[in-house]
Structures are given as C-alpha cells and as structure tokens.
Length: 541
Image (cartoon, rainbow, N blue to C red; front, side, top):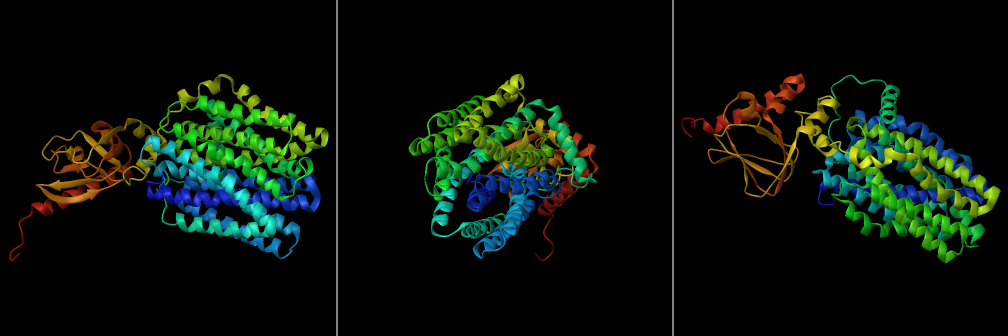
C-alpha cells in the first residue's frame, strides 16, 4: 500500500481522519455524560447520528459524480472546520446545545469519507490483490487509531477538557486535507452524460442492494457491527465509572483496549491479501467479537474487561476487512460510493439504535444484560444471512480494480458503467519482467495494452519516442489502421499490464462515439511523432 505514492497519501490522511473520529466521539460522550449521565450521553449520540444518517446517502452521490479525490478533500476540510468550532465552544464554555450542534455537523461530514475512499482506492490500486492490501492496510491504520486516539483523548481529558480533544483533532484532519490535495482521482464513469437527480441515483443504489442478496447480507452484518459499536460508545463511561469504579479517563482507556486487539489483528489480516475466500476468516472474527461480550456479561473486573475488549477488537478487525473487501467485489462498480454511502447512512442509524438500545438495556437489567444483548447480535445476524451468506465468496467477482484502471484513461472514461464492466472482464493480466519486449515493430497487431504498474519505453527504428507509465495505453495504431506495428515497446521495469484483444478493443471504440474520437486522436498524435522521426532533416540541419 505504501509503495504506491497516491495510496500512501490517502492512507496517512486516513490515519488523521480515524484518529479524529474516535477521539472526538468519546470526548463528546464524556462531556455529555458529565452534563447529565448515561441518558444525556445517549441522547447526544442520537442528535449527532440522525443528521449524519439522513445526509450520508445523498453525500455519497458526490463521489460518483465528481473526482473522488476532490470529494475526499472537501470532506476533510468540512470536518476540520466543524471540529475547530466545537473545540472553541467547549474550551471557552460556550452553550452546550450549540456545541452539540457543531459536533453534529462534524459527524455529518464524516459520513462522506468512507464511501469516497471505497470508490477512490480501486482506481488507485494497480492490481486486484493490491485492493485487498489497501483494505487490510486501512484496517491496520484504523486499528492503531482505535488504540492511540482514545488513549490520547484520555490523556487530554485527564490534563485538560473535551475542548482540547476537538482542537487537536481538527488539526490532524487539516493535515490530512493537505495530503490528499495532489490526488484528484480519475473522472467518474460516464462523466459526459446527463446526470439524474440525486434522489433518483440513491434510489437506483437501493434497488441494486435489494436485488443483490449477497450485498444485502453483508450490509446487514456490517450494520449489526455498528449497533454493537454504538452501544459500546455509550457503555464505556458506564462500565468504567459506574461498574468498575474508575475515573472518567478510563472510558477512553477501555476504548483503547478495544484498539489493542485491532492492532493484534495486523498479524492476522495480513494473510487476507491475495486470498480468494474471505468468508471463513470473517465468520471466525464474528465468533471472537460476540463471544468476548458474552464472557464479559458474566464477569466484570477491570483486568478481564481490558482483555476481553482487546479480543473483541481483534474479531471486529477481521470482520471489517472481510466485509469491506467482499462488498467492494459484489457491489455495482459505478455505484460503489452510493452503496457505501447507504451503508454509512444505515450505520449511523445503527449507531443510534445501539446508543439508545444499550441505554434501555442498562435501565432494565444493568450492564450485564447490555453486554449479553450486544454479544448475541452478530451471531443472530449471521444466522439470518442463511444460504446467501454461504454464496458470498462465489459471487464476489466484479473486477473493480480493472474498472478503476480503465476509468483513468481518457479513451475509456466516457463509457457507460455497464460497458466499462464488460470491458474490464475482457482484460487479460500480464506480468512482464524488465527488458521484455511487449510489442515488436513490424509485427501484426492483435492487442491493446494498459499499464497498471511499471514503465514501458517506446522506440521507433531504434530511436526513443516516449516512456509510458501507469494509466497509459499503447498498441492502438495497428488495431485502428489494420497496419503492422510501427514501434517497439519494451518494459523498463518489472511491470503489470492488462491486454485487450483486437476485436474487444474495436468493439469499444466503435460502440462509443467519445471513445472512438479519443482513440483516433491518440493514434493520429502518435503517428505524427513517428513520422517526425522518419522525416529527413531540414536543409541546413
């Protein structure tokens, strides 16, 4: 992941985002708890989550309409500004209800980030296994943040106040915004076409989920996970202060213990890279996740709570990587942002349900009943999935990385989503070593090539013409003009290429006017470069 410069920027910025998300959330709930106890904390959680849930589906349309990198930048700027205002209000004893409102604005802006990341990273990945690596790496980053951010929040709460947490995290998100500035991402699929209204596009995504049972099951499990997390967020202060008799900073430390388990998951989820079947590992993670709370429901001591929360964090990390990667594989590629936006919206609602539900469970049966309830939720969601859950690995075959690569080329980016997907299915991957000749001058042309990773040198009559890199294509002239190859293309480094057979390539350029015009323009430009090399020197040269 970090070998890819663009993914490195996105990954580091994501670390700032995750740190802020976890730290300010626990800080606001501690502030609310100190204002009025568990009931106030639960209400404040809902106040932040409801606007976020309503906005998320419509905010996610942005990443399907515009360059995902620019949408990511916008979301970071909005978050940093809202957190800075909230921090100022808390530090200078501003009205609590205004601070709750500005914190809700920050929580709403947060909902844009993950759907946008889910749409952006497949376009930056260079091969399918790198997409899994990105999801694993993102989970590692989030795991570290789940540990570090609440721990830092705990220290800031111990020496200062919730306002200091908001101020520090606003700065972290602002740094992330500067990092993603040079990563605009490719144009969206079908960017030249007239767009439908936002609510219509959201409706299409809802319909796609309704008709795709595997995606629906994954979303149900993801939402059950978020119900558990929402319950935990409210339960941390109650468990730390009310049950275990510790100070308020221990609410953050228990959250950090959950993050320790997620860090341990680094050594487990690294094995997911390149793995075609992710369901068994995901189910094992669910067993660890739910089982830890069932044990904690029976025994509540400080040491055991720390260990079991770490175990739950490990299981949750395994679930998250598996579910996120599988959903990227089964969701319609042109609707990735919208699908994940719906997940984000439902997740916000799930967090709210968890926050309110755990409040009711604590009121009825205390902390043990609340822990029992959240421990049973995920196993019940798995049972509800039934046969559709068992079929997930078999259906997870959408070539999202290849589609993202095609979208980065002007030749393919204007194509409609269904045409992009069918073209991506027709691509053949080629791994070539440095020095290998991919195209030889004078031979008959049978393929068009796209560079996913590495670089290729183009020469004519032994003289250099150009050096091509990721996102460049070559080989179109011989296919369009039915002529022999007019140049030799040699891999400069070990490279990953995708090849498109002649008939498939011609079907693309003849079937879409914009693609055909771009292919002709590219071929003409490159032919002129070759002709310039062949031209005799001007008199006097």
